[in-house]
Image (tube, rainbow, N blue to C red; front, side, top):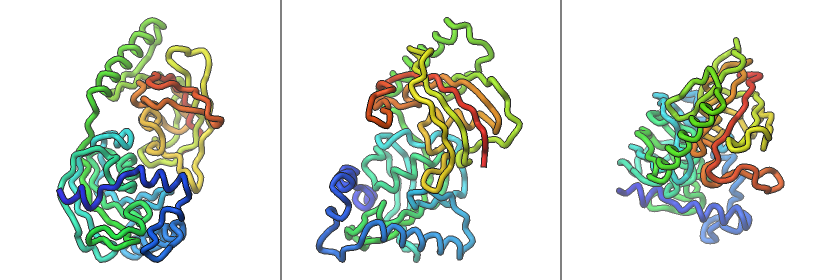
Length: 307
């Protein structure tokens, strides 16, 4: 299990860096490099290489690039605490020299930040090559045979994720509550999805369908299942250079819901809490709690454009 040594990094360290200023976390034993400049340099090197070899990857604002050879159909990791099962070969970029390989089955929080970002946006069943800038790897730290400021490349097979017993129990409670609400309200024309989401399409669109990585302009409104007459948040979302507004960029309830729709569609979705904001809940821009922990949601979505 060399992977646990080579790839494992406590995300807490990254969070501390963000809190105190990244420059304050640089290792004084190495040449000091502004991490943002290094990130830009790494991304430019990755993009240049991929263009040269004729690869068109899935891009991400983080700078991570994903060359997908087989696209899976299962949900990505729910959050950084999700247990993932991954086969991998770790390589140094760009020469492809392997520094580690094997299989891991553990909490995503135990691995480098680049893995956390990637596996929350890769569907289970995907086979891909990940190109991870050094900022999301080991940064300015030498790690075994991996030099400081090394771009990392991983060939991965994403075998699956595992829910905890607590998450499974919560899911059963949530879907039971949603089914009872729909029955009590005599809501008609409800489609039951295998993920636990129920939905009603109120307007069928005639435009393009939405896939994992489609850039989507849409409106959504959140309601609590326990207080369905008052919206807790209304959002108009569209793609930008810093946020791509793809299904994979949102909580899983929205990720799933968008892919049930086409451009011009409107629908109402009933979302179990684990596919929404889970045990953390959600706050508004002022920091006020608007969605409590373990809240089932009603979500109205209107898709206005699919790029």
